[in-house]
Image 1: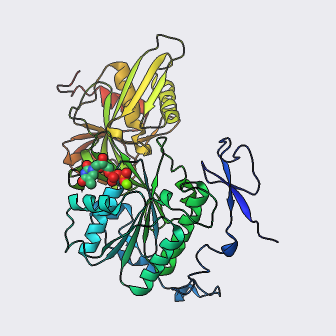
Image 2: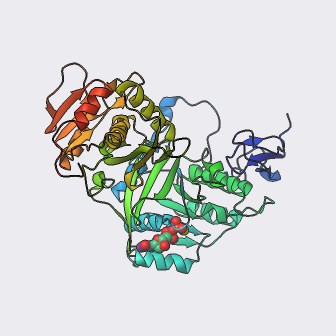
Image 3: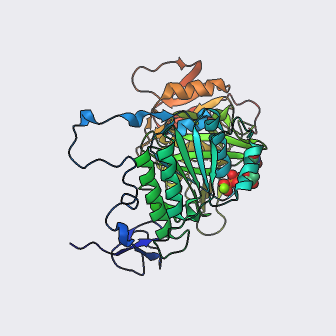
Length: 476
Ligand code: TYD
Ligand code: MG
């Protein structure tokens, strides 16, 4: 079958079609498909394979016994700070491609410059491709982050935005220098290939340039960071088309506190997803936050409508405060406004409270907020969400030293959470003394120094959380 000369790619979600359509069948966006012509010279092959096949080319294609395949992928370049290394799955894998997405100004260049300075300080070569800023601006930023001749030796700037000349430079560099080297492309939206008749930043250009750079990373075993800007709505607009061809996708976002930044791994072929790095933007760069476990806790505890739970995010436990406001609806249909948690989940939990614990929420407006910009995905926070709702409805506080943990089913039964010990240990560190949770079989009376109040149903849990008569201070 003849190879097609062009395909049509959705700029919104990266979906491919063989002909033009007015609406993308995958994401429903109108007029988002653009034509992507395959360059003649490389049609049907990976973009860079032809011209630079000599460097350390891909395999011959013949079957190879798995035992003979080198497991060198486990070679990881040490990444400092540890906070970022964890998100990458413990270090930077040789030949891997990392897409770093984030809104303009969030600190992507700052993060990468900081990592680069650490690498060059340890003898790793860094090639920083500057499409976005002038070399002088990068020098200025590096200066703020502590660049000096000694620490920054091996830090190279490549001021190129044409893919073909950039690849020439990069491949030439790879033949000359075969030590460890990291390539940073800031940003992929500024690159353009002469082979394509499309402007920089368009889906076609991003896809083609990203593909060629990913090939370069795999052939030379040099890891590459691709920076991609995201739109306000939070998706990697153009760079979305790269998500499937890179190994790791990191999102960089701000949080409640103005200077707090979070890096989240949403895809990682070499580590767990859901990992979170929490850092603070200071005058001299990004610094990991101490005591991150309590970052999402407000100063006060024990207020009406507030409840604290311990949630897992990747390999770490965070204490998170859930707040709810329940009040009789005055106008028409009751409102359900939620922040930091899925609204359908809140509706479901409210329905369970109504049916299984006899609470009348149907005629009430419900507002739910997770403090500090945290996102609640852990099912272990079900019971805490319900307790916050019940606390507001009943006008009773949860005692300030009490933690609520548990997943809740439609029948109103409460289930134990995964990794209970780690959660209790973290809570005990921050002064919690008692926990309401479900236990199966022989219940322990205490764990990690915390008193356990064992419950099996939602009704029992609400009684244990709100009627303990141990409320001190607070608004109750
Ligand atoms: P930048 O890394 O340029 O963002 P991005 O590459 O994601 O567009 O950083 C943007 C902001 O960070 C800018 O407003 C200045 C601030 N900043 C600091 O607060 N401290 C620093 O040490 C640096 C380098 C930047
Ligand atoms: Mg930048």
